[in-house]
Image (cartoon, rainbow, N blue to C red; front, side, top):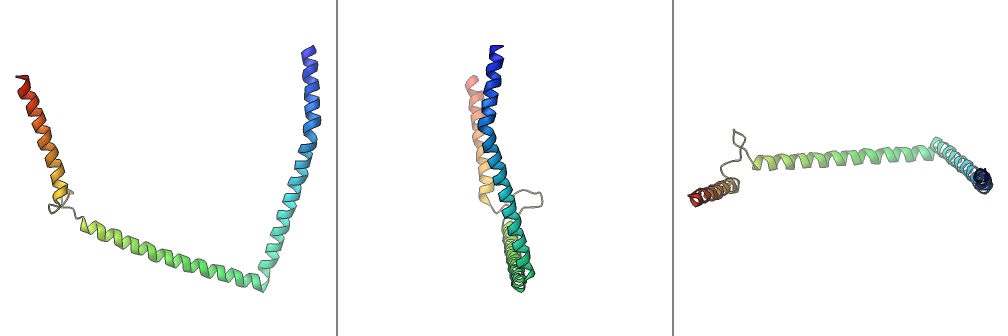
Length: 126
């Protein structure tokens, strides 16, 4: 019973200590919401003025210009990738072209070394 009383008293003290700060935070949150609403109203009023409409038109023009610039950059990159793909031509079978020596040299060397190791292992066992 004593422990329960201590627990109840601790809960009561905690409530007394925490409750004012929670109430203050609630008032502060309401103030923030009101300030945000006021700023939204001011922005709406500004957008209805001729200056706001002019600013909106300027923003639209700059966005359209940026979009055109981006489309041009994408087109250039696409052409670059296409030309790079044409340079690394593949034969009809889908493998690398014969003109690229490095593409054939590495697998051939691996086969030779692997065959030599296997051959050495077989000869050593005899």
